[in-house]
Length: 410
Length: 112
Image (tube, rainbow over all chains, first blue to last red; front, side, top):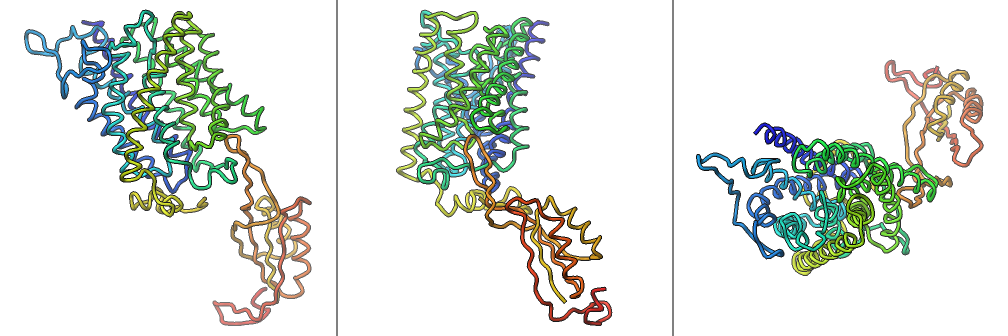
């Protein structure tokens, strides 16, 4: 009983930290885009956390954790249904690490994250109504169904060598990243991003805000990974926080060094993306790695970030905040790294990791394409040229993020 | 009476202001402007170089009596130059008349 109390307190702290990540995402995305679209970006993020949580309560939680099911799709019914004991109060035998309520809220905070990743990639040009429809379907149905394949005990969990994803390099970050990739491709680039085939810089308007966002996300990751131990187990939680922070630091330093060598300038935004890449990279195996493994995984993630950002520019995809590089590329890397580094490393594990990556790629690419292509052919997914040039804040919302402060319109 | 308008680097403002004081010019107006010029500053954002040809500068507007014209111009020339492209320009024009609002008097006296 006392152990459950301690475990449950830790899990609620982690839940709060994961909630706080939504502020981090909001700050990062707003900071790396132009001021005329700030209100629009924040609106999307607020929509995701509120509607996402309600949807997770209504259907998501029971889609993701359906109990016994066929391994691909199961549903335990609408709404929350707390288990009761013989006296009619909450059954604390539910789990030794947390109560039913904590379980729901912790997982609910995760659910919204996947859609937030998409929000940054499609920033400054997507039609808000289409985005909201996409979020409702993606967070309400796709994320929990995909999640059930592994965390709900589905077919990836019952492989001979089970697919391993500790806190969601694939289940959360790649799920958002694949959707971001397809969405960016269907949407097209922002006006002015490519001139005569060459990528142009569209600098973000508030780098201090983006920096605060990244540090908040790092803090949130204490809960994201620390809570994914699913108890306050002293060995695992403390190791997980160490690997998480070392990977973040190594990711930042890796990206900083490579971008400095390649581009001869000290680019803070690459440094920041590198930190996030390291965090996403370690997430799949944060409890399985030694500190050295964590530094290697993070450092490689940081290098991948710099290469991926320029590669994505080269193939003419416009990702204003680097979400595809951070969440998709580093998510895949972190997932595969479980088969290469740490306690689980083996050929069979690597193969299972690969099966996991391909499975999630399939459901995410297909579902995002179907949803957004349908929207594109019906109500449209992109704002008008005039609206894009003058700012989404004024047209989609009829408001300004900074009413007293207008300068440097790009 | 002459109006001397000088576009200078913001980083040179302190030096120019001091040189003007030393030349006996103690009042003028100034404002910050953005303009286009020959200078090209290459900045890099996430691996992409972009030219910042929209340049931030400061304009000083100084109205003086004719005998101060040369001293004012020399003060600015000597204090605002770095030798690099982008040091700015000085424009000199005639001023027809000048009034002091407090008393209504006019002419060169009002600039003293």
